[in-house]
Each structure stands twice: as structure tokens, then as C-alpha cells.
Image (cartoon, rainbow, N blue to C red; front, side, top):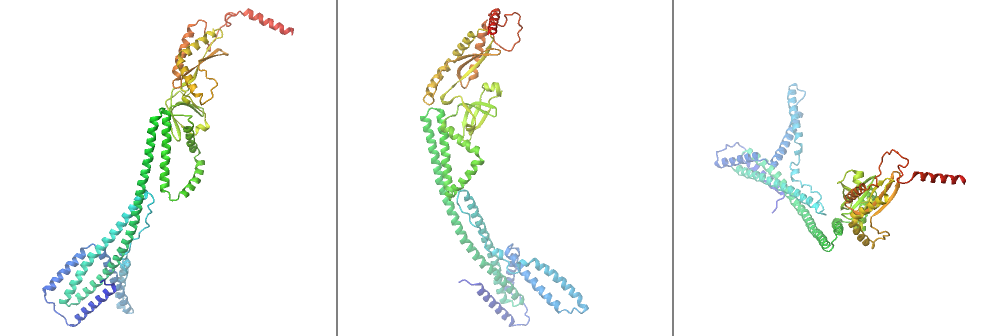
Length: 549
């Protein structure tokens, strides 16, 4: 049967009245006989008092402050009553009034310090801790927040249990003291024992009331804890299962991508196409994984689509170059205008870069700059890694030296001879040397052009070396053109140039034209084998005809 606080108070008051009535039966002073039982009880009570003094319980400290507050309050009321009863007109009472006012002022300061313990000294110990709103486990990242939240609740619950255990220990000591005092009161009828029983009884009542409230608080808190724990545990379990399903879907997507790459490498022998297909497979694989994560953890997909629609409009303006680079990457991959391994030429702000394509990512083309004629004549440096944004294909002219399987390009060598040189022989020498060293490249180019006829309309497919002659102010310029390796133009250019120079230097009637100063010593100097007198007569005859007209 559970005893309520009111019933407990009634029982205690009845017991106290019975003890007081028994004490009043004999009002005459009583000599305390040396009773061994009383001595033993007093020793046990002293041991309990010593244990209570050594006990570092917050309950005892709070109750001590509570009783001290009311003791000081009673003293203040008594001093105020005394001050009212003192005759202030009597000069002899002035000193007493001053002393009592000084004591009153000191007691009021002490009372102000202990004001927090006036009514309910155990309020913050028995009050239910505030339980914050539990987090909603909607994605794996919030799992850690849920675990931390549960740990905080467990800490609060352990604190309540520890506080209750501390109170139980104090109540056990006080209850033992109360029982010993009751036993002592049977053999010792002194008023001191009755006062001790009364004070201990009041203390026990305060602790019992706090214990009842604290038990109710813990019971309510445990029910709330179980409810929140079940909610969070269910959310964590759901997210772990969802994470497992998502992980399986991602692994399946990655596995399919790897399988497609293996199939591509087995059945497609062209390295360039294999690389392109691998890039496309990676792109779609990443896109599928992003979509899986997006639709798995977005509560309102329609709302997300609407937000992304408005956001993409702003991003399209603010990040135009980025989006254009992605679009350029799609055009490059689908159109096939540039592949990894191609040699390309890019011009930007007057700077020319020629190199081999190392990689084509979604944002940029990476090329390795090689030593070319441009490096020799313009840049004077090579070997750099150049990053070209993909959006350049829409705004810049990018030349591909090896598009469509082509591996050769036209290259030309120019040199000048004097007007009195045998230019026919010089043209013949240049043509023969070009044919000699470019014969293999010429045959390769013919085969490559035949393959390109299926895709492009080729009007002129002549790949034989060509030689041209031009009259320049300082002599006759001879330009010889031939097919050469797209990746090694300088090597063949150097070889052909030296060969032509060696053969021309052996010819007595061919002279290299360069900026020189010539002193004319004879009338015929500078006109080769032509007779200057004949040229003069022809000129005079033409002048006479003009005069006759």
C-alpha cells in the first residue's frame, strides 16, 4: 500500500503528540541513570551524525541551507519583536537597541544570501530536464546527430538516477537516526530527545516529499526517453537500410560501367575510340549515381526540380563559360573533331600553341606543347602543358593536324636565287630532293585521302611534291612543298633543306640570293649572258615608234 504525503504527515504528527504526552506525565526533573541500552543508542546516533557530516551529498547541503534560512528568519522576527518591546525613550536602552540593530543587519545579509533556499531547496534536483526536439533522421549524415542526441538523453537519465541514489542513501541514514531516537525516547524522556525527534522527523518529511517527486520525474522522463529512443532508432535503421540499397545500386552501376569498358576494349581496337567510349561511360555512370542520390534523399522532387530550374537560369548567366565548356565537351565527344593523341594548333590573343592532346575532360582540353616551327620562330620555348577551355571551339579557330586518321601535313621550304642563276636547274634540284625524302609520306597520304572521300568531298587529292617560282625584288624565290609527318615536321624540313643547299652549292650557275652590296664594273654586269647593246637598240626603236604615233 502506497502512503501519500498527507497520510505520512498525519502519522508523524500523531506519533509526535504521543511522545510529548508521555513526556508530560512526569514534569519533575528526572535523573538520567546510566542505562547501557541508552548508551549504545547514543553511540549509534553519534556514528550516524558523523556519517552525515562526512557525506558530501547535495541533498544534505541544500537542506542545511534551507533550515539555516528559516532559523535566521526566526531570529530576525524575534529581534524585531524585541525592538518593538524596548522602550526607546530610556537612555539605558539605547546601547541595547544599537546592538540588536547591528545583529539584525548582519542576519538580513545572511538571509539574502540564502534566499534561494527559502521555499523549495530541491527544486532543480527534482525537476524534469528539458528534452529538446529530436532530430528527424532523413539522411545518413543526421545519424551522427541522432546518436549524439541519444547519448545526451542517457547522460541526463544517469544523472537523475545518480541523484535519486544519493537521496536514498541520505534518507536511509536519516531514517535509521529517527528509529534510534524513537528507541532512545523510550528509555530517555528528556526534552532534548523530543526536539531531536521532531527535527529529524521534519527533515525526513522533506526528503520523503522530494523522493516522491523525483521518482515521478524519473518515471515520466524514462517514458519520454523510450519514446524518443524508439523514434530515433527506427529512423537510423531505416537510413541504414536505405544506405545499403543505395550502395548496392551504386555498385551495380559501377559494375555495369566496368563491364562496358571491358567490352569496348575487347571489341574496339582503335585506342582513340576506346578512350572516347570510356569517357562517355564514366560520364553516364557519374550522372546515374548523382541521380540515385538525388532522388533518394530529396523529400519533394517536384520542389527540387522547380528550384533547380530557377537556379539553373541564374547559373547559366553567372557561369556561362562553365556551361559552354560542358557543351563544348559534348560537341567534341559526339562530333569527333578532336581526339586524344591529335596534334592541334590554338591561337589566343596573338599567342600560338601547338601540341598533342593528352586529355579531354568536361571543362578543358589538355595538350603537351612540342618543338615545332612555331616554337622555333615565335615562342622560342616548348614542353609546356597547355589547358584549353572547351568553350574555345565556339569562339576560336582550332586546327587539327591529324583529324580523320591523317598523319601527314604539307610543309614548305623557301629559298631565293639571283636573277642570273639557272632557275630551271634549281627548281629541278628542289623537286627531286623533296620527292626523294617524302616519297613514303606521299604514299601514306594518298591512302588516308581515299578513306576520307567517304566522309568529305575532296576536289584536289594530288599529294606529289610541288615546286613554285616567284619573282621577288631581290631575286627568284623557289618554294618547294611536300608531305611530312605531322608529329616531326622539323626533322624532315632540316634534312631536305641541307640536301638542297649542298646540291645548289655544287652548281656553278646557281647563286643563292641574299642581302648584299654589288659594285658594277662592266656595262654587262648584272644581266647574265644577255647583250646590253641589243637591249639598248630595242629600247631606242620602241621610243621612235612612240614618237611617230
